[in-house]
Length: 215
Length: 259
Image 1: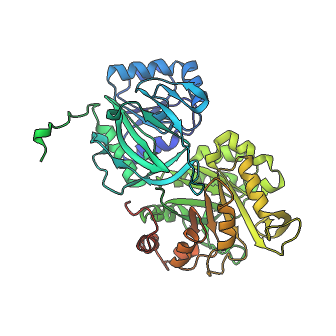
Image 2 (image 1 turned 135 degrees about the vertical axis):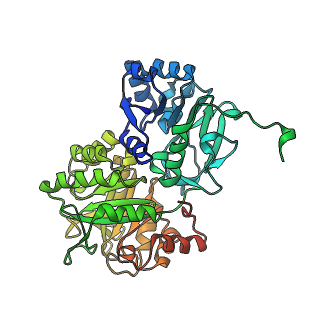
C-alpha cells in the first residue's frame, strides 16, 4: 500500500492511476495521522514552493512528513516534492522542509533557443547507484516540466543528473527518502518501472562497494 | 538535452475517433481509447484529444473519454476544442488531462488565458493558433493572420503579435497550426513556425501539413519547433510512430528512442 500525500499542489490522480497500472494499491490523504501509519509514501506536487509550504504548514503535513522520514518510512518525492524537501527555494525565497541539505534554484539560461519551463523528455544519467534507479540504462529519458531544480549541498545526495543549458540534479536521495525532478507517472514504461521498484523498496541504500572490490 | 517531441492528434466526435481531415466527411473510424493505447505503446511522446464537435452537450462525453484515456496512457496528454472557461479547464485537468488547449475562446476573450494559467499553471495552458498567410499590412505586419472558429473566421489579428501576447498572458506553450498547410501533406509552414519559435520563450509545436518523415525533420531544423503534431501521416498506417522516430534519429535529431 502506497500513501499519496495530497497537499493541494496540483493533480495527484495521475500518480494514483500509475500505481493502479502497476498493480499497487494506493490511498490519497491530506491527514497527518495517515502519514504516521503509512507503509510507503509518495510526495508529489506541481506548482509554486511558497503556496505548497503554506499548505503543508497549515495542515500539519510538514511535521508529519519529517516524522515519517525520521521513522524510516520509504518516501518518494516527485517534481515539487523533490524541491521542497531541501532547506530552501529561490522561488519566493521560501524556507522549506530541510530533509536534505541544499536549496532549489531557478534555471539561468543564456541560449534563447532553450525554453523555460524545461518541458519534455530528457535523458537521466545515473551518477551513483541507487536501488530505485537500477533499471535505468544509458540514454533513457523521462518527462520533465519545471522552471526550478533541486541543488543538494552534498554530492553524495545526488543520484542522477540531466542537462538543460547546464547539468542539474534530476534525482536526489538521503537514507529512506528518494526524489525525482521528473515525473515517473508520466514517463511511460520506464517511469512505471521506477514506481514498481519503489513499491518494493525497504528504504535502504546498499553500502557502496569498497574500492578494492571493484572489478 | 531535450528530445524533440512527436505528438499525435486524435480528433474525436461524441466520444468516437473521427477521420482527421476536418470539415470533410467526418466519419467515425474507431475507439479513441484503443488508438491512444496503441500510440502509447508505439512510443508517441504526447497525445492530444481534440473535440471537433466542441458543443456544450458533449462536455460530459469528453470528460468521460479523458478519464478512460488517462487510465491507459502514462505520458502527458492534452485536450482541446470548446474550452471556454476556467471550469472547463479544471474539469479536464481533474479528469486526467495534463494540459488544455484554448483557441477561439481566447481570441474572443483574452483574459481566459490568464485565468486558466492561474488555475492550473502556465505549463498546462496551451494556446493553439489557427493561422493563414495574408498580404502584409499595417495591422498585420507579419503577413500572418489569426483565424478562429476552426479556420472559418478571419480576425484581423496579427499572428506574431498574438503569439507574444498569449505568452505574456500566461500561455506556457504554443501550437502553430497553418491553415494553408493543413491537409496538404506537403510539409509544415516552416517560415511561420520559425518566426514564432524565435520570438517567444516557451515551447512551440508545429502543426498542419505533415505528409512524410522529412517534413518532421524540417520542422525541427528549419522551423525551430520543439514538437511536431502528426495525424493522418500515422492514423492510416502509412508510417508508424517508431518509423518516424527511427528516421529522425538517423538524421541526427534527438528523439526519445527507449520506451
